[in-house]
Image (cartoon, rainbow over all chains, first blue to last red; front, side, top):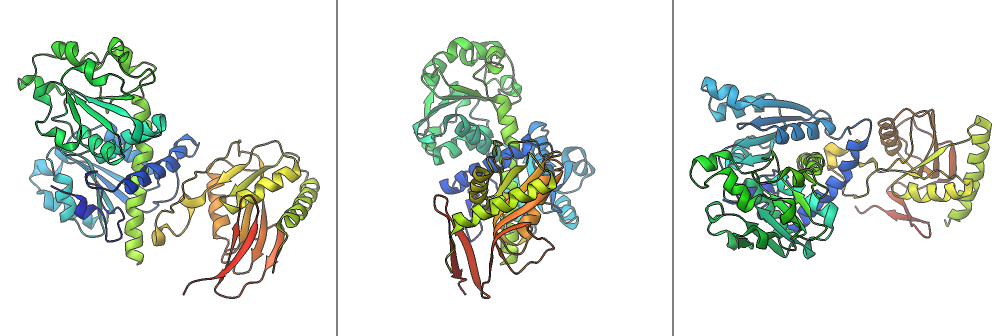
Length: 324
Length: 167
């Protein structure tokens, strides 16, 4: 399923942000550069610029989320947009309202942008096809497909610390098969030119055809992170253990848990990342998560700037298209 | 017409110094509007012998034309490396035209704090104001034909380019 056809307008400007797959490197670099410009806004006393004053952003979360929803919320507010937070699981659908009816109602409230989080892959793409032409959609995570703003904020964090993507060795460790974050990371980092990109995990959690995405597969953690400049750990979801893909959390930690001892195999100045929320003692040891090499909390801060950049670029292209 | 821009800035610095003394302002802070205003402000700072680093504003997030032309593709963010609260500021731009850039710059400054005062210093003043904004110190007045545009080029050697807009 390619989203590239609907997310760029005829001028190549970002219209929706559904997936990183298929986007040109210049556009990803533009997102990162714009995020650099927005980052200092968060350091000021007045953490707000008037760029999107009067625009309305609706956060449509069909699946629970704290970090993603609050950082989208803050990003929109720091751009002076008004924000509606809808926890759809708890409202309309329980009353039997169809998705199409929910969307029509939000259109009638004159929203300009939907941020969509949904448990089904392709949901954001589907909604982008359904909505009125004056509404833009940002994918806040759809099933196992993509989480493009997370992919970009991870790329932003890596660029802040390592500058040049084309010299890096990066390992993504854990449950790659069920991870939309991993997919967006792989897409972004390949497009940005990372030459040595690895996925590390037990065979049951690595998708069979993943090498077609240009990554090298390791099932041994020590081999997988050796000499890496960046180690991205993924959250291990508890339900994977119930579905018998894994024996136990304890055993997973023994084989794939990132510990300080193991981090010594990576490059001495390597950084450790995690999209959160972390399972301490499952995929990562507390000593690493809270250690000097961890940039996990910076990822949260940078996520706001990256989401500001994407929102401003999309609503800016909407404005330009409207003025043309 | 050719301008000796370094000489203009030298004269502006003298006028500004006189104004500051008359107003009893002893420790002003300079803020240049990117990009041309920063080049002019750097030179004024050297003339005035100010120790404080220069503030640099990129007003892209405060422009009033976002709903017509979207986000501006410039990369450098704003940097105000001093406390704005209670400060006497000197806002510097290269060319004062409609006044919209200065309006945006002042809005941005107030998101950093409440300055005690702001003086506006511009290298060139051309007619065509759309807002009630005037500069306190002006290097030279430009008289341009309708459809002509002026642009300062730099940064090592400053010169004024005048060209006709493409139809």
